[in-house]
Image: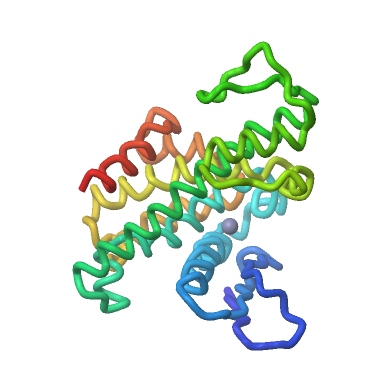
Length: 259
Ligand SMILES: [Zn+2]
């Protein structure tokens, strides 16, 4: 028996950040959220729903390690896949009842946010690797090493993150804004693979794949492998790709913003 428990109630000391807690996979999976108002609640809820579906549909006979552990790019892929339904105008029209034009406009907002987030996390991978290696070599505008040196790790943080996002970063965050276990790399890999999974779903079941039963079967076939029964690269092969490639994400952004 599988229990997915939605903890959406208001408690005074509840943490505002939404999360999925796979207590026992697949039998007992919690989705915890404290709605604050605004589109972000929907985005967070859909993101955590992706994790929840993944863990609740994992094959229970896998070992604990394969169900729960390993890198998180597999689970983040499914989280992004469901989260970015908000960038699909067909989903917005069907389930949120947005008029066509508004749906396109809102999808554009989500895609811009996604582009900013992707560039931020890609920059974080570059910065965090350099930080851990104590490599202060200055990077040029293409993020390639030069002969110069940053005066400090904080200066390196500001330069790399600001250059990548065009948003001014504060030097004080140079140690705070570092994810444990290089989680930023898991997100980046997941952004790459999410588009590839979505393209397959669209090819097979159309732009409104989210409303087709067959899409659920297709995804359950992937979800069953848990967190590390198959890696992102192995899953890519399983659905007919030669490997994980950034070209699908780049094309997706270019096509969307050209349209
Ligand atoms: Zn996540």
